[in-house]
Image (tube, rainbow, N blue to C red; front, top):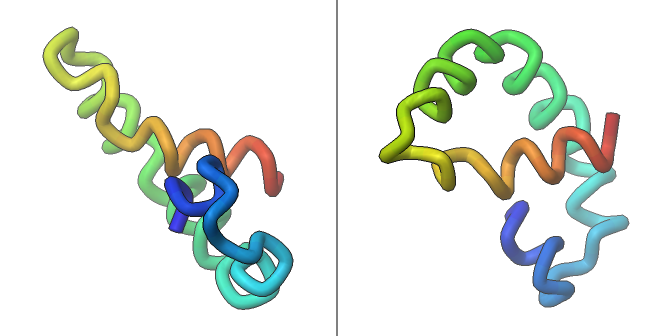
Length: 58
């Protein structure tokens, strides 16, 4: 979903209406886990699109 919005191949308004709360809650609740996974130099791209979407919608 985040990739579709970033690449402009999905309707952001419809997706936001359905998933905004889920994306924000997920990122807020799993912040430590996401940062831990991204902190490893081998995983810099992990969750990149999700974080992009979270920051855009928050």
